[in-house]
Image (cartoon, rainbow, N blue to C red; front, side):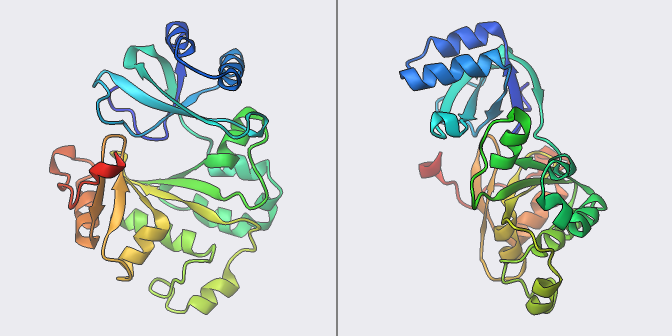
Length: 256
């Protein structure tokens, strides 16, 4: 379990649940936790906080609207994880949503990418739990898992078709991109994720590639760092060889 990445879903053992319930929670949180355990719903792996033991993992639980969209956080021992899994695939969520019909051409292009596209955030949690998470204006949060830089660039081109990017560097004509964009009734957000779990917000990565930003934030379960475009290129090339990963350009200790 030491290779757990951000946004991995985990299900706890009964012993781990006893530890969680024994922590200091208010009445609303206690009610939520009892329900969560009864329904066998997962937690999600969060970024490791400073001072947390190496044999423990930080977890998050974003609650649905019934519990006021509370966000709970805890840490459990690695041996308290019974199993792990992933957020649903984009095509699964789209098939259960009205916007999936409108977005069919764009979704078909996504199916041809050398990438695995998953849905987290409100749409992902609502799909998994059947509980109300999505509100008017909720973003469609995607994690696009790629093996290398060419796959990441193709994913950026695909994501940029959703508009709201100011993108002229990829398409050559931002107006054409907007006119050809599918009429999605929601904003597409999320990140490009490399093989070792290093993730960049796709809009930030797009600006970086276009030369309209000097650096972009790269995050994984253990660290945050700022990289310029050559650093991202090196990161992508080294994704399959962790020992070659570039050193942080700037450690954001205040965010840890």
